[in-house]
Image (cartoon, rainbow, N blue to C red; front, side, top):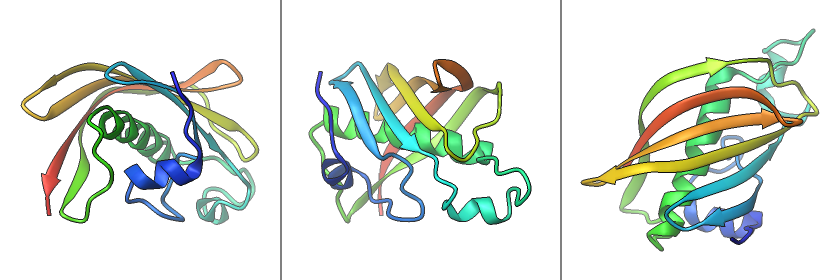
Amino acid sequence: MSAMDIHEILKYLPHRYPFLLVDRVISYEAGKDIVALKNVSINEPFFGGHFPHHPVMPGVLIVEALAQAAAVLTLRTENSANKDDSVYYFVGIDGVRFKRPVMAGDQLILKVSIDREKKGLWKYSARAEVNDQLVTEAKLMCTARSV
């Protein structure tokens, strides 16, 4: 089990502001699971339009944050830092459920575990929590592709 700061995360993810949605890795176990976090600030660019009178993080961005945590888990498991010749793509999602909104000021905890890997296609169970309450859950699929 080990943690990662933003500098190490940037070695694995090609995403940058405003689309980098993982701020820190709290714990990580190669080939097994990851717990990461996203601090949801009122300064996020999407809050200006979603919604000005009631700032709610879009559900699709919560799912993207989970996919980014899954990418860090897999790329670090494979000891494969971010490369210019390939991208780790989010290729599928099943059973997504949104249980409650994520608001400005929340700390989103991203929990992703590997279900299986076959021929370069990784499947995960993912859940996002705020204050130990489930806000989103899904089954994700990701894979690396040459660009």
